[in-house]
Length: 599
Figure 1 (cartoon, rainbow, N blue to C red):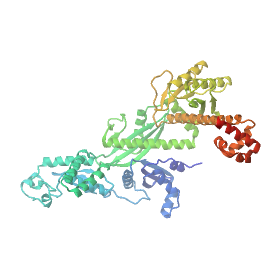
Figure 2 (cartoon, rainbow, N blue to C red):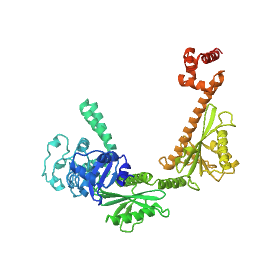
Figure 3 (tube, one colour):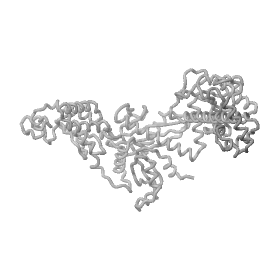
Figure 4 (tube, rainbow, N blue to C red):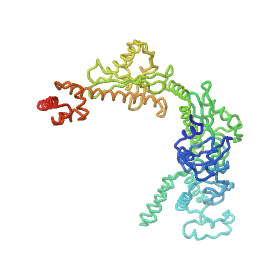
């Protein structure tokens, strides 16, 4: 029997993210990042650690939590934020000061743009944090190439400029600055450049890249190829660079984010707390449904509970749809931008949490897993009852030869191979799928009725409207139409057809219901093809046996084991055959094949 900790490790996703280790008293031991959460966490338990402190920590681990993020860089940022906020015992201690670099647009006349590790709350704008100073330098180089800005620390108030207090420096003479200190550049024009830089830092590279490419082409036209190549290198970096991390804008402060993923029996609500542009807490709770409550009602209950549990005082919450939380809380349903990204991340974590729980249930409580699957199939396929017994039919023939059909049976969503059946087509000549389907469906359920065997709740026909109509005729003849749900699945677009409905049903490609139907269809196809091949092989063998006078089946089987095929046997010298079955039979066999060749 697996322990809860082993189950948690087994069901971790193969995705980037942050993991947290807790002891038996639910105290946080360690926070770490991973490119692949499952592999990284398993590595702690699959090897002997040389460091004694690590061995002690691993022995103390009683529970694991994780947060999924889109990239490894974002996992790095999130790990950093959580360590500074939560100060886990076994992590290197980080203080909330100089860590990752930012780019600052200073709140002043003729704004300076510069990299910094120190965020000062003076009304300035900060973009980042960036995981690499190379990225910061690339952006700063791009900005300097496109927009000449001042680098001095002068207080460029209108009065100071008018009084002539400052003089232009070398940067002005080099063409890197337009000289606003002496009034050579108007404030309005300068701030237009700053506005363009702000768009670059927000991730809108379209206009700036266009200008950068023009600069590269101009340099190439002037035969300044080395400089043009340097500009091209920067363009390549910027085109592949993701300018923003999951949480990057420090102006997004004191914000709570909630999302919900639900199924027939459970709802999973993820909560993310954002402070100064950083995730400081993530938690997912489960709610068991009692009366098929809607998501809106469940989310309202969960938000109130989580805000009380974690003593949250934020005045704004992000949710995927409107909910009523009273007049003291602003409810936002973001559609675009930074807030939508955070909401999407919350929903992704809820979805991963649900997947983990379902994997654990499948291992620990198969009966509960089966009930959930059956309830989901009933809902998805609009069935009158849960399909605990499903049968699927498929026809197989090659150019009209040896037509056969297969019927596979699934019980509680799993193959019941002892109930699989083959059918040799008896009443149909040639490759007629419709007539073949009508015959085998009639024979199958006529026999079940005659033997008083239980009938399935669902029949699936591998094919489109034609095969479905043929199968329906047989059910009508047997008086079973309306008593058993029957549907067809077309292979090309996974379209599901119902009798009398010209519009097909399309299931979510990732849904468990569609996966089970595809498994049924693939099993029927495999089972039918296998029988078809066996029948053709036996037919060829039987023809060879019956065609040689004085040679029985046992002798032919012995020869085929030795020569591997009829073709090799027919080409074998008489003396080689005689070594296996004796000279008399060898002579009969060689004479038979020689006569056939001459004809």
